[in-house]
Image (tube, rainbow, N blue to C red; front, side, top):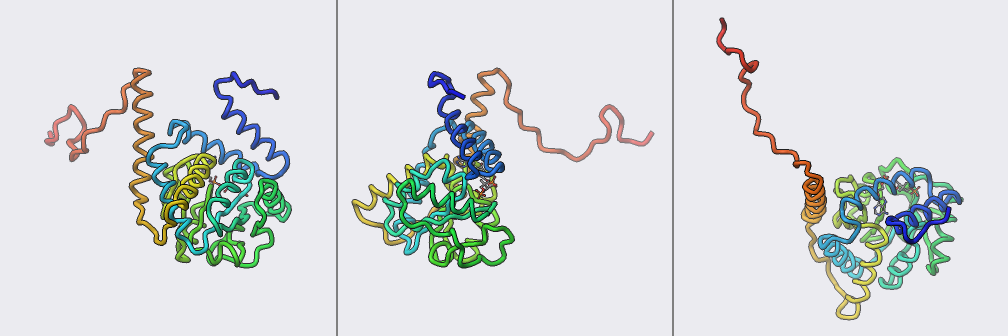
Length: 274
Ligand code: PTJ
């Protein structure tokens, strides 16, 4: 299908076409298309741009990656299809960043495809194609990792992650940076540093911030980050967007219900026994 650049949703349609094509090649699983749809819905509510709160989180993420002894980025099918160039830019901006394939729906063939996509984008060393270690207490294939990468990492950047592994990585004492458009997801809530932004915008901004920060002084410690506040900011952005949309379409936003009082019996009837 030919997409017209004049279509008002041209950018979004192109991303969809790219994912659909990657799905036909087997790089992206069917579930990945569903995940993208969910992400798009949240992006729509967030105004399809990086919010000031997300930018702040991205700056902190860049600092954490630079301060890390062994930083790693975990790459799945969706991330490879959407953002291989951005992963490569980040690897250039953060010296020592390990790039590791990690799949929920794992097959040897898909792991190779993800690695090939990353190499085509300019990443020379890709870990995780032949896993050499296992994260304990994690029932999915996401537990299969590389002992030179995720297993020994102190900071893990996990775009489009699932909540179970984010929690498992934290349980191993690692600092987890997530990228997820859903501020309510288990991953966002489990992460030490949740970035609520679209994966390409987020990785681009983190890479730019890391380049800038490196030129001044490379951070040597982890600046504390308020994860709850950043999730609150994202939710407030969504509430504002919905309130404005409701006002525009003259639908009154739902009124707060009065706090429930003790039952007064059935309205219109006396509580006294007759
Ligand atoms: O390639 P695999 O086998 O590892 O599978 C990858 C998917 C994405 C299918 C797998 O990790 C999965 O099922 O993910 P979930 O549990 O659906 O979660 C994906 C999360 O990413 C959701 O909370 C989405 O809102 C969010 N998301 C989807 N697309 C984007 C996104 N966040 C940022 N940018 C996006 N483009």
